[in-house]
Image (cartoon, rainbow, N blue to C red; front, top):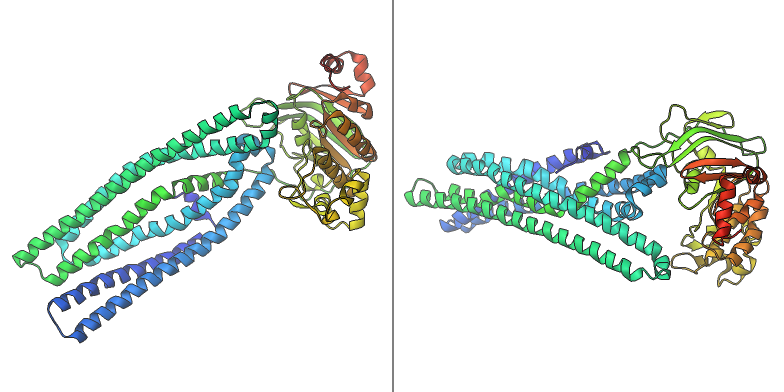
Length: 580
C-alpha cells in the first residue's frame, strides 16, 4: 500500500512522529469519549442527580472536542508537509524531464509525461494526504482501545481481537484484485492521454488528409476501454466495501448479543457492557476508513510510483568545471565511435564512426525522413546522450567529454526546429527568450533583421502584444521569423542548429525566409538538417545520412563527383518532383 521510497522524502520522519503523537492523543480522546458517554447514559438510567449527569456529560464534551481538534491538527500537519512535498515533486519532475531530454518523451509519450507532471501529481497529493493518516489511525487507535476493553470485559475483547485479522485477510484478497484492476485502469488512462495529445497536435494534418473522423473513432475506442476498466475497478471497490462493512457490522452485532445475554444473566453490569458496545464500532472504524480510502487512492499510488521512478532515473553529470570559450574560428568538436539508442536494449538509432566540426562551417545534414537527421541534431545539442561505449570518444576544444549535455556547451547554441514554440507572452518576451534582459531597441533591430518590422508595427499593442496560445495568432512563417529574431538578438551564441526549419512552409514563404536566414549564417557554426536540397548550395560541408549512419560527408562538389549516396538522393528528389 505504501511505497517504501516515501519514507526517504525530506521531512517525512518528523511529520510521521508528530502524526503518531497526535493520533495517540486522539485514541485516548476516543476512549474517554466512549467511556463518559456510557457513564452519562448509565447515570441518566439510574436517575442520579442532575449535577452528576452534567459532570460526566461535561467530560464527554471535552473528549469529543479534543477528538475533533486533534483531527484538524492531523490534517494540518500532514497537509502542510504534503503541499510542500508536492510542490517540490512538481518542480523536480519538470527539471528531470528537461535533464532527460527527448529520450523520456520518446519512451513514455507526450501525453503520459504531461499527465504525470500535472494530473498525476495531483492524484499523488490526494494519496499522500489520505494514506498516511488512515494508516497510522489503523496502527494506533484500535490497539489502545482494545487494551482498555480487555480491562472492561476480556471475553468480548478476545473475540474482537480474533476477528480483526479475518477482516484484514478479506480486505487483502479484495485489495489485490482491486490493485490489478486499478493498474489496468491507469495504463488505459495513460494510453488515452497519449492518444488525446497526439490527436490535438496532429489535428490539422489529419483534417488535411481526411482522416480526422477515422481517428475520432480510435479515440472513442480507447475512451470506451478506459470507461470499462473504471467500472470494473468500481465493482471490486463496491464489493470490498460491502464485505468489510458486513463483517465489521456482524462482529459488532455478535458482541452486542454476548453483552445482552450477560446483562440478562446478571453476570455483567450495565456500565461495562455499554462501554464495550459504544467503543466496539470505534475499534473497527480506522480499518473501515482505511479500506474505503484504499480504493480512492489507488491511482494516486500508481502515479506516485511513476513519479518516483522518473526521479530515480540517472541523469547525465554536467561537468561544471569544464571551461569553454565562446565558439570561434579555432574551435572544434570531434566525435568518434558514438552510438545512440532511445532504449538501452534497442539497436542503435544512430551510429557515428567519425565526425569533425570546426570554426564557422556551414554543415548541411540531408537524408530521407526517418534516416536520423533530427537524432544527430539532438545529440549535438545535448538533448540526447550517447550509449555507453568503450570506444566512444568526444573531444570539445581538445577537452574529452562523455556527452554534450553540458550547460557550458548548450549556452553556445540556438536551436530552431520545424515548428518553433511561441509562448503565451508578449512579442518582446518571445523574442528575448535567450536574452531576457535585452533592451527594446535591440529587440526591434532583431525583428527588423528577421523581416518582422511591418508585423510588429501593425500589432494592436506593438511589442507588448500577447501572442501564442490565447493571444494574437501567428502563421508558420511568422513563427519561424520570431525564432530567427531570437538568433539575431544573441549573436554571441555562435552555434546554430536548424532542424528542417522550412519543412512545413510553402515554397514562396520558404524563399522569403531564406533571405532572412542566410545573413545569420555569417560567423556561426551552422548545422542545417533538411530534405529540401536547394539549401545545399549555401553549405560548405554536407553529411548524408541513411538508416542511422553517416554514409557520406564532404563538400558538395566532392560528393557530386563521387556518384554515391548524395547523387542518388538528389536523383530521387528530382524524380519525385522535389524542391531542388
